[in-house]
Length: 176
Image (tube, rainbow, N blue to C red; front, side, top):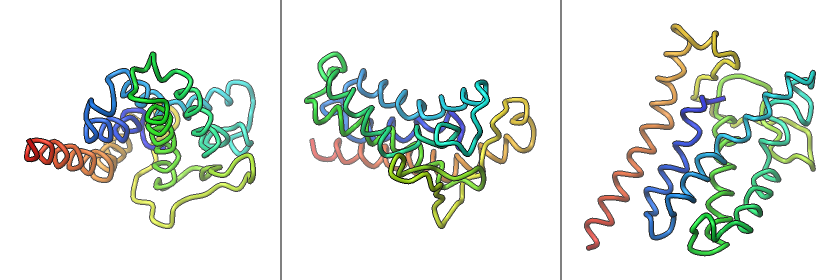
């Protein structure tokens, strides 16, 4: 998995690219939280739920269905999120949530992602996996392994997100 520092980068980049006309600060914050929420499934380890279980790490919370459920919640809360419409709230939160398992599929380790749960328990990876997997335990992160993970995320997630934001901001400025 990418680190919790990296998962919100995708919705933040998307929100900045779209601008506050489409994505309010509240919706942006909700998108950042939604992008991190799937990893709450690591709590399953505390309850003795196996990694490979449907409710283990990278299971149900890493599925399209989970993204749909959060999108439905966002649609119901579109006014408090100060979204332009319930559709905008739902689509933004769906994309933010789904970005999490899609990034996880690009990592070099773990059990894969149960993207199609509850229809299939099969775990998936992308054919191309350039992002170094982050360790689950914080104490394993410190040192060379952690720096390798952060360098990988900077190259494959942070840099493209920054390019997207700069290009979108430049385009908006140019259009004025």
